[in-house]
Image (cartoon, rainbow, N blue to C red):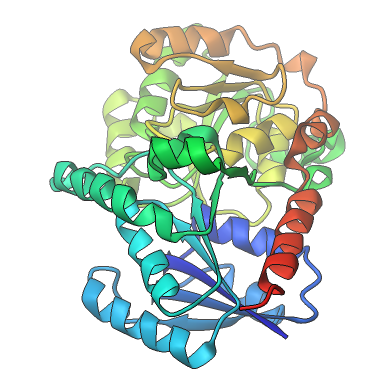
Amino acid sequence: MRKICIFCETWESGGIESFLNNVLSRMDLSGLELHLVAARLGDSVFTAPMEALGVRFFELSGSPRRVAENHVLFRAMLRRERYDLVHLNLFQGMSLDYARIAREEGVPVRIAHSHNTALRKSLLRPVKLLLHRVYAARRAGDATAFWACSRPAAEFLFPEKLLRERGFRFIPNGIDTARFALRPDRRDEIRRELNAEGRFLVGSVGRLCYQKNQHFVLEVFERLQSLRPDSMLLLVGEGPDLDALKRRAEELGIAERVVFYGVSRKVEELFWAMDAFVFPSRFEGLGIVAVEAQAAGLPTLCSEHVPDEAAVTLLFRRLPLTEGSAAWAEALDAVDPAERRDAAALVAEAGFELRDVARTIEGFYRDEAGSDR
């Protein structure tokens, strides 16, 4: 039995959690004992499915801010469990200290997996960015393998010199392409359920937060109303900006045409119902929802901050945020819903088929964790 520690700073219902749930659910876990370790375990839609797979969950201090306590508890856990491999899922450089601890405790395989390209907006962001750079420079070398969801994500976490010397493994955030393949029959049903019949339905999916930039989506939609009075906006997700976004929709006079849907376990059906997808992120590790939207055959309009790796079909279009909301509205107005076509096979051919990604990770777990200490 090979013991694997999968680490996250926090465990909630975000992109990293979704990625891990998706790949693990498609792996053959026989002969693997998987422990999910997090500084804090929050409520997550992915906990029960992963527990059903046999994954065991462990919480450190209960807060990512208790850094010293988390390090002590992590070290004690490594000594007790004697893992063959540690897979660190990271979004900032300070967490690379866990790679140092794993090295000091003799864990032979230490994966540092970068999922991000920037830090969230906050008053302490400049200080955090400085610390991020210092820790990345000092601690990245403690990892034995560099993984990233895109080249910008690799360049954000790993020093340039180490990347030149060691490179990195591109691990796409795979999707079940068959799940997203367009179903015209269900498209009509979902549109009826959303009261979107006869409307031009624009959608955006993601956590309601600074990074995903839904305030800009509202400004774009307000402009689109004058070009396309039949338009309707569907915002899928939850997050800290929800109340502010609702107030802003009221201020812009578009509240009656905006649906705040919340989270969904069947996001593919919402993609089928949409006519266009808009994704003006301020930063992205990859932007997997843009790939999902393309698999569903959606014209996908993204900011310049969405990495090139997400541009997997001709449905993808990039427009800088500096062009402004008017230009974005004009780009959406040019979309013809009658040209909607399925593109799931193209996304699979581009390397994003989930089973292939899961097979790659499983192979690494088995081959590397099976080596002698």
